[in-house]
Length: 119
Image 1 (cartoon, one colour):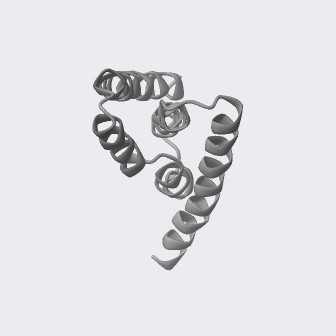
Image 2 (image 1 turned 180 degrees about the vertical axis):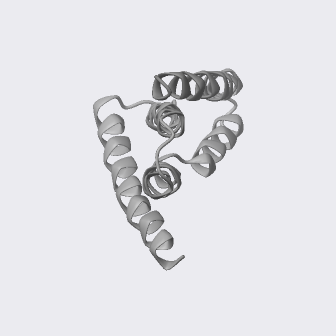
Image 3 (image 1 turned 90 degrees about the horizontal axis):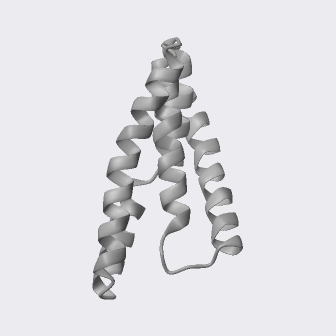
């Protein structure tokens, strides 16, 4: 049990660092009031998590990469906060677009990852 916690923690460490780096790079390269960085990270994470689970990896790899890395890499809480901020700024079209793209494309990309991972 303790080793499983270590796998999740190690994956989480690297997932959080990766999200931080990628998000900051996107924000610097493409400054915008639209949350492109979180959108990109979450969509990429949806695909990769689907790929990980579609590949039917051993439990250790699922804990390290799926639960740990992808759990820390993607961010549901930031996604929700950014939506609230868009609505508060009266950018309801942008918020609605963000919600629609995140949910629709996220599910489709996860499904695509599962299909590719199962090949």
